[in-house]
Image 1 (cartoon, helix red, strand yellow):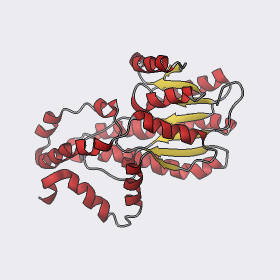
Image 2 (tube, rainbow, N blue to C red):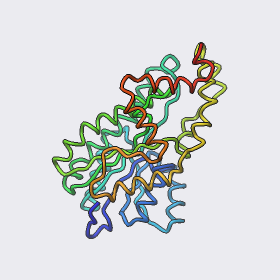
Image 3 (cartoon, rainbow, N blue to C red):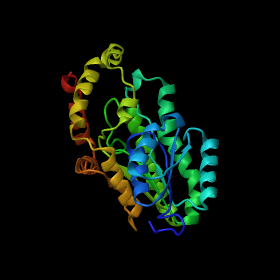
Length: 289
């Protein structure tokens, strides 16, 4: 990103900064010299963010922004741009997990996950674009390898992330014509409170899984193996900072070798058989029944 006079390296607004990747990115960006507007849905959950900022010796402008409240988020984005006279970058990070398969989730639960992970992300992007056009800035969105590779018992989350991926891939060349660079950062497993925030009650899930109990049991046993090579939020934040600073960043950026190989396998799998064969194994013995 080109350095901006009067505002260090530019003004960047980050969503979902109460924990995990969002918190780590806010602190890292401030340490790198950006003016950081760190937003979160519930200001009462800003304690960890404030502590991390204090420990790093940086100042953050912490504001409430619920990405599912379109009028509120539009007002907040406009207020930030007015307060600083510009908005140079937005990092879409806010999101919510969803674990469960189609017959075990209600349609309201599925819609709610899309409201946050897809519509909320697009609403923030829409509100920010006029300001990013003015600054010839950039949009960085935290996606997921789940937006590329569909994963058992994560259908809703993966579908929402895939929708974000497709939308932004379609938007990127259009935004480029008005001076806005669009990138999506794709982490694999990350050690953060995001997983904890899904609030899984594993015994209750298994008790309610009916015919899916063997498959769900296999999946829940596999999850720790998946997270054995998980990154830290700080490692993902470092990739986000690289994208912000890159004069010509690519559209799609994976944050680890694992993520690169995972995504590469999908992009080379034209008929989908390799991916489905791999993810079927995550369900253990149930996959052969």
